[in-house]
Length: 121
Image (tube, rainbow, N blue to C red):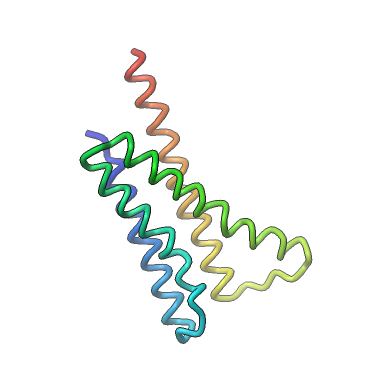
């Protein structure tokens, strides 16, 4: 049995938790602290879909994982290039999101390759 749907569910829940912790730890000052949760929810939902329709659900989850990997990089890299990088709750949350989504993407890619090899062999 493929364990990627469970991995996606866990990834979604971790991102939702990051978003909620960031939001409440930041004193509920900004909705942008919930951004990890905004990516975690579709990863969670599409991974739940993958329990019934594995290929469709996991490909959709991978798309959201890729977006969740690239979106914070789109903020971190320009900020660092300008020399304005400051490690605080917001940047820590973005870095955590990059790491979680990056690991999820690596696992998705490995799973897709294994599935293709199994189908061909």
